[in-house]
Length: 420
Image (cartoon, rainbow, N blue to C red):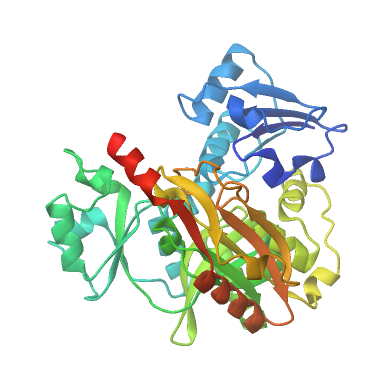
């Protein structure tokens, strides 16, 4: 089988060779130079570099028009290139998720409309265009979320006190969001949504031909929006009921996720689940690693087998769950500016804790990335912990977040800021 992979996620986060036999298949990786550099030496494959000035679809099409060839599968495991892969499949006539199916899980308005149509609760919402046309009137009066239709890592997401506060900020072009405060604001790319309070959950697993193969339930400690604003984030596995499994299956059916991995987020409010969003991809941070430790299943490699039409290898123990309850944690560094990173304060009591499964800490003096990243060895601190109960794991994470902070050289930070 000839396989084309739109390669955007660094290889170690996927480990493609665990799911694709590179000796049996003819595999081509198509990506930018810095990502192609993450391919292991000696991996049997072709690597085609793209300039990165246009979309992956446009550059792949240009390459294939200059060097015509056919493929049996076109695969992307990146949130940001799922649409490119669908466009390329459509252009080449290759089987796989269609452009419309992928749009259904990339556009949060269309996504919520589909889930609402399946009689599942979603937050009340309006396209920003409609909200502005209605003079800022909404069918709710309290806290309101302003966010883009498509996106990840809580970029450009803000919470306002009320719909009227959103309307005023948009009208005054004072949201702090570049695309909305521009001379020609891109309001068509945004929506408003009522803020629903309650624990935020995420459900991760694999689905094949519309049937869930394996599934875990987790609860966040902190929020993704809080992480974008500089606060640590984690989650811990919790028990999964048949009722919840059925709810997840209905949500996936509604958005036509039939094959591959999924990462679904919901709020537990008033004794029921409120759908937030879903991706036809694995979750970020250490979701994949905690999932594998809890179930024995490496999601990306099993997803690749599903997409190739090959048998999956899911142990029966995965369905029963293990004796330990895992959680992951990550500290942001993108918000700290250009000061010198000096390490962690208060971490000594946690590094050697017997519950720690992995601990990835940046060395003092390592430059901090300016973009939002959940990845171990890019964030100042990331890791996995395991205890004998969900409650104990949650309390461990809460204690970590209360006790450990990032040390910065404030004097140097101020000097570098004033010099910039």
